Length: 264
Image (cartoon, rainbow, N blue to C red; front, top):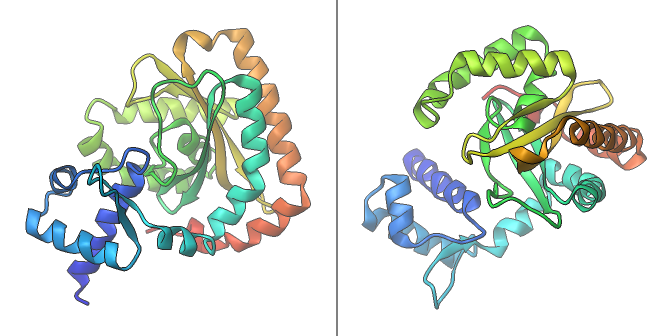
């Protein structure tokens, strides 16, 4: 298989992963991928035949197929997701907010789990979505906990992508969020994709004290009063401290290894 075909297939799978809750029509995939309609249709049908993509026969929308989930069971980040899941569920239940688990992958943060509380906000980040570490409270919480040289390198690498995808999100604002995160030990910031919503994130460290993941919560900005911030922070600190000390977490994190932290 030629390299450009692999790149195109990977791009289509990422698009479906980022929109898997609602699925995508063929016209949506064509628009978002900027590929020719005939090319997209041919690739999607091949992926459907292999079970990597599923097409609903009524809506004609495309979703990730079961074969993707079967392969995903072996992914180290999903072992970590399983260990973190009870803690993420508890935080969602006690706060009523939407809670996310973000895992670092090189320059990016990948949302590997999302749980909704009783009062979730309209904005929903799909599990499986990858964003630069400089975007989102979870990614910023991980990034702000790295050493300064590594943090600066990741920011520089991600800046062109930020300028393209988030033109109103300035380097000065990124730096301000990271400075606050390093000082406070958490990040509280506006959600770029949803005005009027804020998110609070705190990093999770492995046995070597490397920041490898983060738990974050999204809620309406009006809910983030001083008292509520303290309540949520206490819950996050207690949950993450208990998580990091658990035997299952200690067993799961070596599987993450340096590969999940590599620069790519």
